[in-house]
Amino acid sequence: MDESVRIDKWLWAVRVFKTRTIASEACKKGRILIDNNSVKPSRMIRVGEVVQVKKPPVTYSFKVLAIAQKRMGAKLVPNFMENVTPPEEYEVLEMNKLSGFIDRQRGSGRPTKKERRDLEDFTGNLRIDEFNFDE
Image 1 (cartoon, rainbow, N blue to C red):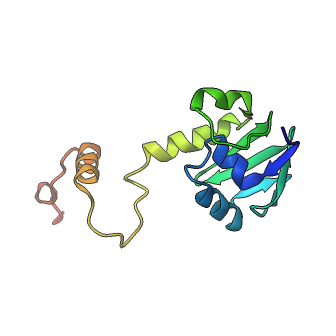
Image 2: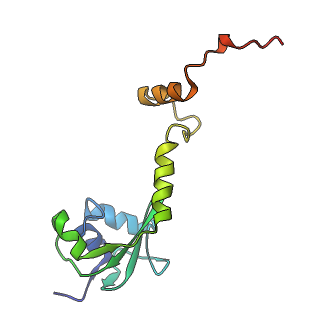
Image 3: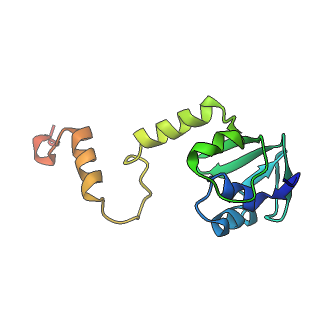
C-alpha cells in the first residue's frame, strides 16, 4: 500500500465523516488540524500523525495507525486509527447534552414539544398566578 493518502480521503475511509465531500469541506473550514495547523483537503497524511477533528463542541484526536484508500466496515477501523481524544472533551460533550434545553439561543423560535416538556420537568410546572407580587 502507499505510504501516504489525502487527509479528506482517509477521514472518509475510516468513517470519521459520512462522505468525502463533507470531509473536504471540514478541511476547507479549518476544522481539521495536524500539529495545531489547519490543513487543506489535499494534504497527504502519514502513519504516526495525530489528526484533530473539530466537531463542536468537541475536538476529537485520532492517531493514524495505517493508511486506508477505500472505505471500510466499522469493525476494521481500530486497525487504522486510535482514538486519543482526552477525557475532558467527552465531559464537555456530556455537559452539553445535559444542558441542551437551557442552552437555547435567543430568538430561535418556539420551543419544541420535547423542549417544553423538559422545561416543565425542570421548573415543576410553576404557574405565574401562584406568586403574590403585591407584597
